[in-house]
Length: 93
Image (cartoon, rainbow, N blue to C red; front, side, top):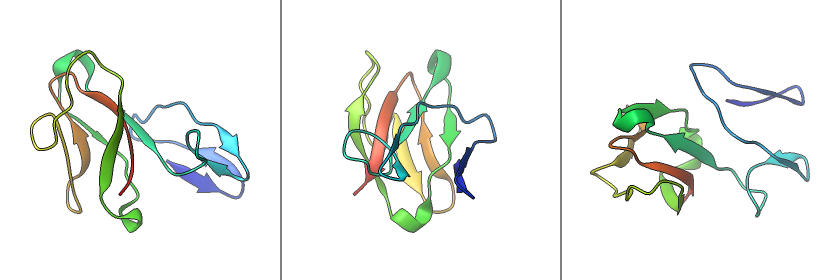
């Protein structure tokens, strides 16, 4: 997902809640965030803008714990991923 010519676009099965704020998008601080959800405990890759560096988990939205390296992770090659029921909000470090 991203912004192009003032319009928000999504693809590849991406879905999320976006809020326009001061010409940007994100959560309460107006910064860049991605919500990524493992549906039915399955692996899911989510779009992450690698130019922003590595993500960090800022909020767990699931009853299942989100543990880096176990139920979520990131690499420049594979992008942001979640698994095992983890659902969280991620922001740049």
